[in-house]
Image (cartoon, rainbow, N blue to C red):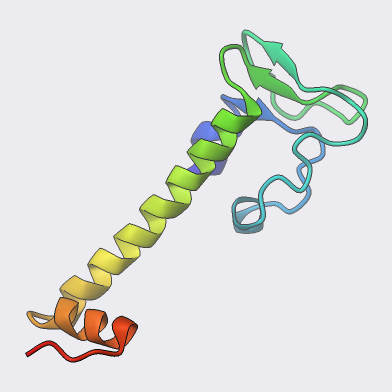
Length: 106
């Protein structure tokens, strides 16, 4: 989702570093790269070479990109937790809570 919706529409890093899933797992390795500043533009042109500075959609900031990335990670973790609870059955939340807190609920 990140590579399809965010990368080509909000921020273009000309030196992305890791690609595929690793680019999402280890973000910011090239945000922004080199000695260039990030330039705000009306329209992102993906796949520019490294002679160009990184570009960010007008109205966005690097902080906004990091907040969006954090929301993606949080949503992914919560989704995984909910699926795990659903798959474990009725008492799954209780078991997970007891495991995490190392306490027993009576």
